[in-house]
Image (tube, rainbow, N blue to C red; front, side, top):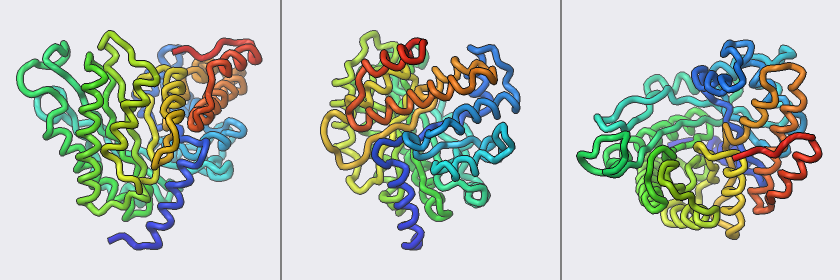
Length: 364
């Protein structure tokens, strides 16, 4: 059992993270992933450049109007910004809640390309340290692959993926992590990401998402996790990027909400979407379409990484003289997603920003 006073405090934090008009910035890329972000701008992946990159994202003036919390990487929660002040204190003073990624990467599950996530061993002690560093919420990501017999990247023998065994194991691991988080005083974000890779259809994505979320909430219930103090970070229902036919924003919204209403308990604190390889404008448009469908039992907001960062990173390009302009580009993208949480985003707002800034609107 978890102390009731602790649960009330965690529930309050969870509500703050999904406050109206606000979303969560995912800035928890590993050092290797940051290198991929830097490659297009020909920037060396070293600690100084990573610090400057995080500074650009975490010190934008007025960011808390649109961003409620930031998921940090282990390096970043220990770092100072370019002025010498810790990133955590900068966030706290700005009214933004610090969070932390606590999983430790992927492990093979079977021989068909499926994965589980490492990090349960020693988790309690790591969480205690992160709480002492200022973290108030945490995130754990699992990845789920969809395939069929025509998928070129996976063997055709055996059952279609995701397998029932992989769905169940990831659900059990997410539930075990979530319970330890709540015991240690952190709001858990559970993230079962359905990968966009592959040639699966919209219907296949819907079917897989339904199975994944059904298993997840069964295991959360079995573990005794308190849903009022937990957030779900999940994929929109999307066809695979190699399917050959894109779904409309309205189709994505309809199918995503049908999955949620069939699987997600109404007492969950909130749902935050990952962008999962969508373009920045595309992710905003789809979020807007979902929130244009009327009131739902849960807040539906965003927790994007690339879809918030990409245009700003290209504008910054590692050059100090571009920092202010890059932050304005970042704030524009955050504002667009904030409007989308109310179903009030329009493409004209992109054009207006491009005209005012003398640049171009973000591209898909």
